[in-house]
Length: 576
Image 1 (cartoon, one colour):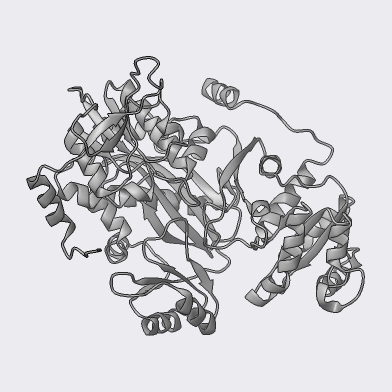
Image 2 (image 1 turned 90 degrees about the vertical axis):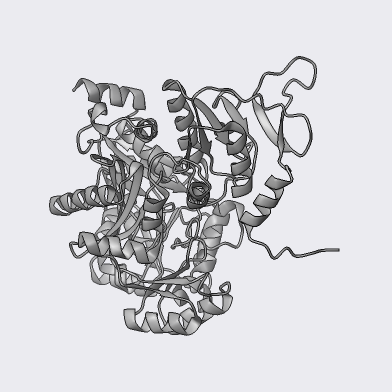
């Protein structure tokens, strides 16, 4: 018979404590009983014998990322591994808490001690009481451990690095707005809706399009760019319950803006900017799905200085000790702050490899109290070469899923291209992501009115390179009117043979540039994108990605790739 306990979590904790009901820890026998096992793998059990064999050394507990999922994956595993290595180098015992056996951070030689336990408040507190570490690190495992920070601190757990209050100032929408106002920094117009009617009211006041999302999301889950009220109503019908406890965030969507990611280190007094990354895709594409280039290639010096200054001020105002990630948007030479994450971000491994500095290890030393100045990093590091990060998307594994990118993250990994030019680096990244562009052949182009002028010269460049251009009626007319030779092809629903799908099936199309504008045109082009996945034809759905690839193809004409290891690149950079 089920019984609902209408009790607060703390009262249940106290009850269990008073009754002396607490878990013990067993060791996983990695030798299957054949030999004595010394591997410190622990899991909890309610039993009498405890095998944890706790030490009296100086120790720090690391909260890992939990299960790998879209939006929170191997980048935090990387961060947790480097955290453990940094602690060991500093003579501190590292205690890893993570429930995922398929990570490097849970390998036998990564940490001194490992607990295979869920990242819940109850389980983490039980381990803390058993081990009694000198502190707990929450900012290197992503959003999952970060959510535990305030509750852990409330129970007397020392949180190393950025304080839970500072984390809350960045996470809480109202408190963060106060921070931006104090620093005179701009953000897109926004509002918080606790009801469907309030969401409509905010959207009307801000003006469409708007970006809507539940509060506290992971990987942009359930985020959507809404262009009109009917779309908002449909979203609200399908959304989970909206209430005071689970409000909906409504933001003005900045069209035609460039998004920028910044990763930095701070010790509360000094700031080091490790990397400024310019997104290749338009603002509104989730940062985990957007290709980006480091250092930026198309941002003015004035804007770069403004980005640096804003990052310094935000890091110091939030009293960050460790890593901080700031996401900006630039529209018409105006800087907007989108969000601040006082933790490691998914771009940290990319930045660390690009600049050749172990920024996670340094962040851990800052959390342990070492000053940033002792590392002699300066204010901002210059990358030795141009690096491009590209997302690896799993569309071939999920038939029926649309390939259009948006605010909800879909990528399951990322790759990196390195070269002395952006074009070569981008082409390398595309090849590594499994989207190798054709060196010759036929390109199918269907572009919306908004991006026709933007893509005119890039498509001309493709034609000049010797590619055959075929296009739907509107795009064909536009190209012809501007002196670009192309062949007209029938749309799917024209009822004439052959149409574009027939060409894709017969391997007569080798690259697709398809930039839908509205939801209607996206749905009309859905079949084309599905055929592209099925028949393994590279398909670009944003003007920015198309321009970057074409630029790379032009640059790489009659030219081979440069090949250098990261070790060689960084060694030569240090010599110079």
